[in-house]
Image (cartoon, rainbow, N blue to C red; front, side, top):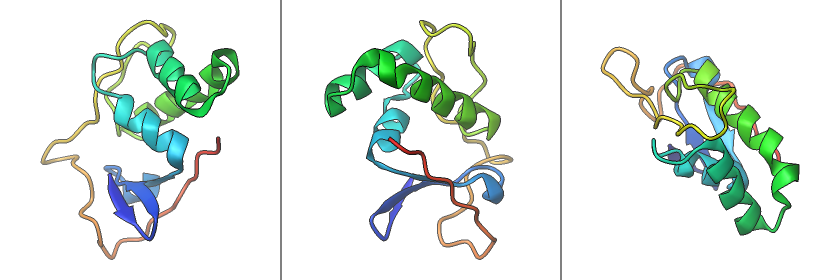
Length: 112
């Protein structure tokens, strides 16, 4: 994750999958530590932003699933909101694209 011009960016293994994060999405990403579940991340976001938990849970689950599809976090039991979400992936073969790379980037904002 990098900060650039006031935005937080996640560099994915495929540069087309890079993501620009707003404040709530950045909080969710930082909360993915291999210990917290989707439900616990949802509770954290709800408490931080004063949003009812039941209104945020679908967004949290969708965000985490999107990170898994983009290979930014390891695969996890998406149907089990109580299972810990593995932390961000990184390996020499699939590690993040270096910040400032000249390869094209598609930015996706996560609203909330």
